[in-house]
Length: 159
Image (cartoon, rainbow, N blue to C red; front, side, top):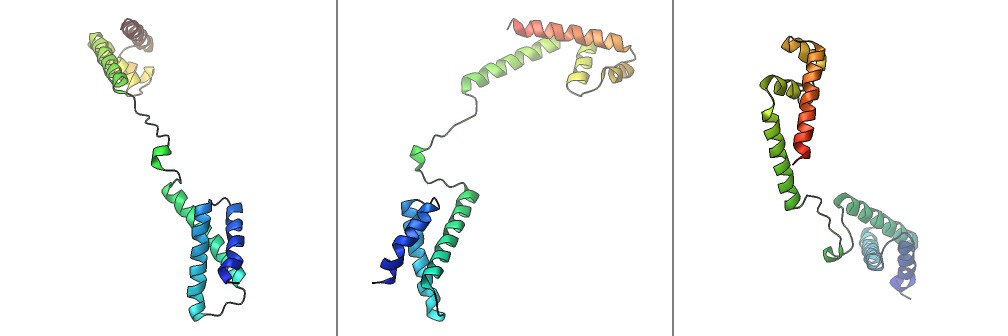
């Protein structure tokens, strides 16, 4: 009985228990036998079955690492569910239109209030910092920003 016939079924079963597909197991078994033949050219092998098992297992580990590193999947591309998470053109257009409307509402605010809202919402300044910067009370900043937010909320709700 040849070495291949003797050990190939056992190696294949071992690899399949490790979650390797039939076709991949077959390739790994063949590669293990090739490596045994190459190794025997220059070295003596005491336990051929042990050499084949260790080689096949190591090859399966290497193949698994390569697959994870490159995100390789075994299914054909046609069978994969590909999800495009970018918004569809209609949603992009609606978003742009809403943003333009918001900018138009923002432009309707008086310049001092607009600067305060920008400092608070975009620059992240506190009410106190804005009050100190503009030389007004914190209460005045709070009232201006509250009125501006109310105006912009109504402005956007009607759009």
